[in-house]
Image 1 (tube, rainbow, N blue to C red):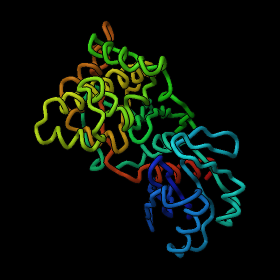
Image 2 (image 1 turned 120 degrees about the vertical axis):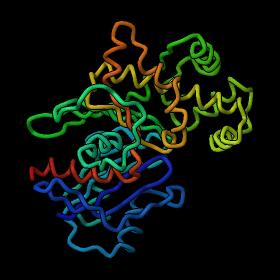
Image 3 (image 1 turned 90 degrees about the horizontal axis):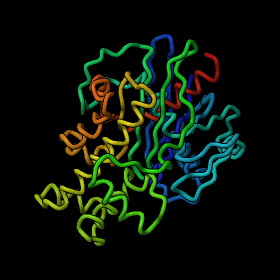
Length: 318
């Protein structure tokens, strides 16, 4: 079964043809291409470009993962001025069976197909994971969100969520100080305001009174030994540990926490430091339970495409 799959982020779109074999528990991706969203007026143009260069035939269905809120047959992107609808996709691609799913949901559906060598272990938990354990996916990129992957009698189920737009919580006095400063500009500071890419800029402004550096500038300066830039990376990792620890405990994610996205990869050195680990563990009487949970970084840039293929196969009843 050939499925046209796509992962639309805030900056780039990735497309491929997925060949699914549920019997072998295998998904193969062919003709993978990445497009910069700013080069196109809408996603229909991306589809047309992809089909013109991939020269694929006999595509049975399509599944799109998008960073936005899905409403019936429509998605409005969270960090991109695109509106995507099933009827438009059907017309553009000339495919009748079309599914749309949130991008973090797709990452959750991909977990069953992630290869071990595509995982970087950040925290080694003491718990031996079982096939029915709940897992958590946290996406740190242009935006931020979380998805919970449940195991059911019918297979994996990943409900939609918008954790990224919930109000940020704090774990210590320094985080409280940072949050108070950020609230001077807005009374509502969401997790996305800190844990997505622009969060590095906001922390740099609070900690170093710098407004002239991009996230890339900050991380480059940290690599070159700038202690104040390193502090920005460390504090971002601390906020991440606090958030992921809360989410993991709320959902008893003994199957592990899986991080995805360009920001997560960029700050990986800080996610391996004690500040991240302590913020993840620190849950009072439940701190020992937190030490059971493993945390991983997903290195596969195309995992969501596999998730799209898995999701569409489940919905098709195959």
